[in-house]
Length: 356
View 1 (cartoon, one colour):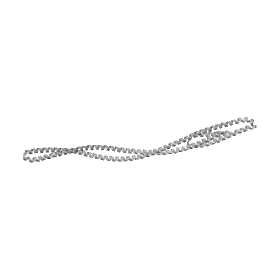
View 2 (cartoon, one colour):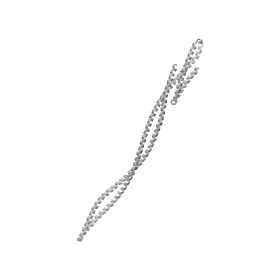
View 3 (cartoon, helix red, strand yellow):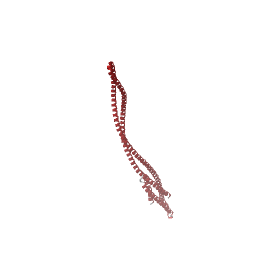
């Protein structure tokens, strides 16, 4: 009977130790269930240990009573050798049971420390994930700001492109008018050259007329009284030719100034035309740049919107992970508390067992 109780006790302790080994390998998801099993086994093991000790004491008392009976003094020598091995075996098993309980207490303390470390690590991980979620939220908000700025830039580039198109149209109009003025002034300059030639011809005619009038006056003087009237006419013609020559000289001076200014105007209009054409080309290039910039900003805006949406998805997933980690932290804290309770119970059982 005692053998069976010893076996039950050792099996209970061994099963409890095996459960602790399993507990060390499965700390997260099955810990709460195994803790409940361990508590039951520890309590059961403690009860069996107390029963075994109680029976062992009763056995010793019975043996002493048998040895004190006079009628049994003679066969006591033969009974004692049979009883002592049983008692020694019981003591050995008790020592083994106590050692097993000590190992269990050590294992439980290690598991308790591991549970506390796991709880602390889970709490640190939860704090890290919370910080990560805050950073993701900040990035998402910055993405919204960037999207708003990109939208404003897109609107500004569209407005700038519209103004550039108006500028191109105005420059084309100005170029057309300057080209027209340049051609007109250049044509006028050509006509001033013709007028200059005509003035030169008039001046030559006036000089020749003056010379003819002088010759006529000489011939009239030779004719005497008969040529006196002709001399008067010749003198008037000479005076008129002198006036024409002076007027033509004055006109030629003024016209030469006009011709010089006309040439300068042609040169200025030519340079202005070239500058307007170059400016028009630059405006067209700028317009093309604005259109390309508008296209790039549109692409960037779309990418920013995609990034912002992705960051919100990451934020949602992060919240789910954070909730899961918080649940793990809660379970880990509960497991740590349960392991502390199991360790305390086991230590109490070991102390009671050692005191028997």
